[in-house]
Amino acid sequence: MKLLPYHRFEITSGLPQTEALHAIASRIEERRWFRITAMGSANDERFDGRVTGNGFNVTRIMGYRNSFAPVIEGEVNEGGRFSRITVTMRPSIIVAIFLSFFILVFFSVPVGMGSPFWPVLAAPLLLYAMVMFGFWIEANKLEPTFRKIFRAM
Image 1 (cartoon, one colour):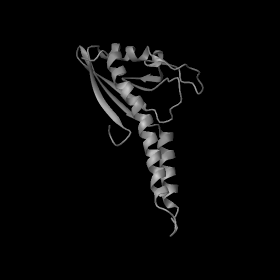
Image 2 (image 1 turned 90 degrees about the horizontal axis):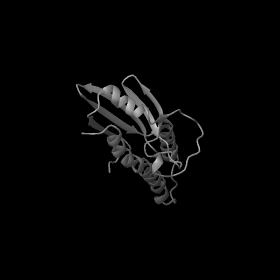
Image 3 (image 1 turned 90 degrees about the vertical axis):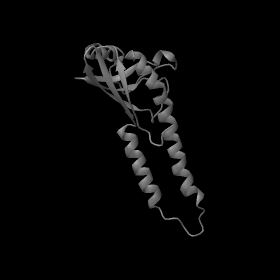
Image 4 (image 1 turned 30 degrees about the horizontal axis):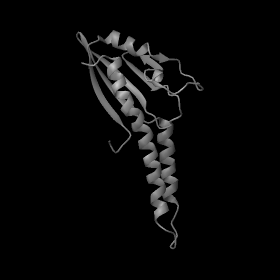
């Protein structure tokens, strides 16, 4: 496991660029603010987002709430009879702003002389653990899913 919630990998696919883009587009649904879904493996290859030019920007449709799930950006480049897909997973901008604000506020509060030190350290470590767990649970599911969708070589 990496120390930051950021994952980038490349897939070499036997599909040409247009077919690779069609493969992901066929699994993308329209973005909605509110969606009711059940948990299960049926959601593994369902995404909401969009395909743009030679890339895509998606999030996985889950049957549960995970605010720290990755936002996935991909770029599909042509390589003759195959394509090379670069996938980048990162937290959403809202999560990054929230974490920055939390850290800024939390560490700007002065600690009194008699205050114990452990709460000052425990709260950011707990938040870090929550972010990393929520992000990597999904990221570890998504890499094999994308390899399957794009028929990795």
